[in-house]
Amino acid sequence: MTKRRILSLNPSRAKAAFHRACAMAALHADSSLSVRLARYNEAMAKARALDTQEACHE
Image (tube, rainbow, N blue to C red; front, side, top):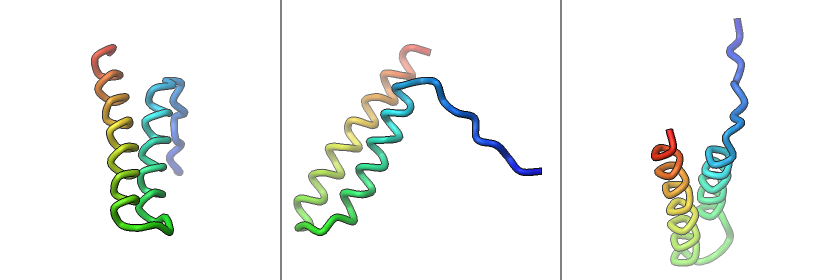
């Protein structure tokens, strides 16, 4: 039997996943290492903030 993914109706969880995906895309972008790292760190900081915000509201 195949496993189904349960869709998240929590918008902050979806936004955090979006920022994680942006962070991974930033690492593979065609720009300098310092720019890629800065974009990655910025996106991951947003994702972490959303994760902690979600944890506080549960």
